[in-house]
Length: 285
Image 1 (cartoon, rainbow, N blue to C red):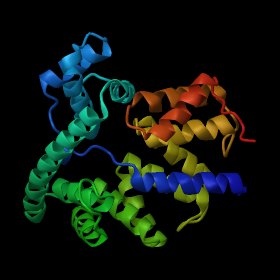
Image 2: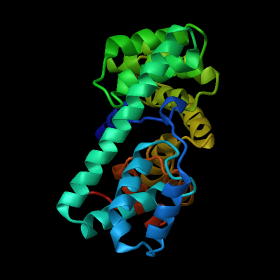
Image 3: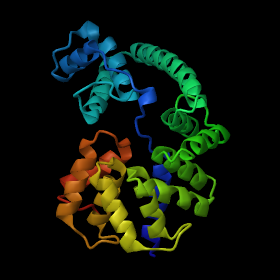
Image 4: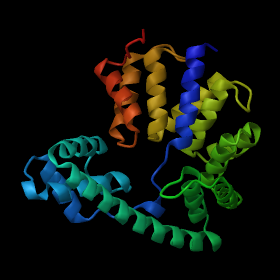
């Protein structure tokens, strides 16, 4: 395997362990006022004295799953930057502090409710709680509690729990054990597990290298709409790594990944570059 592809895989695996999907436990219904206010801001029809409130609502919409129904995440990111340029430094800090307080209150209540549900044996709550402890969503990461709740969910044959346990074990470099749990979740068509397993099969990490099976799993994961897999597939096709170069395919997957609104800014920028380059990425010097 060439060194460039090996570096690419290491980055993808690291991104996978940080890539968080929106779980119901932390979701909040977007208030009608939020959506209306942000729609006015995007249409440049917002009164000047409402910009501080709009900036607060942008922060909330970006932080909460489903925080602004019908508004694309990339549009929210651009609006956030625009408002930061128009507001005073004190106004920006005040809105950020207000949003942080609101989110912390929600998280504290959610965590208490989740613990009760998880301890009562509800597998979705166990998986949600495992992810919160694993990724440090609103709290300090705790690998012991993350593994505890992931094992409880995985023990009930719950695919998201099996995937999370696999991801936790990967973080601990227990690769062979991780593969076993990822295989279980992938067989239940868990898109994140399929993606993780594909990366491990390409790299030969914890499992014998099998590029053909990796391609099948990667395509299945991307086909379900999982943005991380779509973005990875787009870059492979744009660079001609593993697959022959396919600019049309790269552009298609890049557009789908970008339109998901679920990518970190760095990956979203790369998808923009693939789309702008008609399925190709500029070579690094």
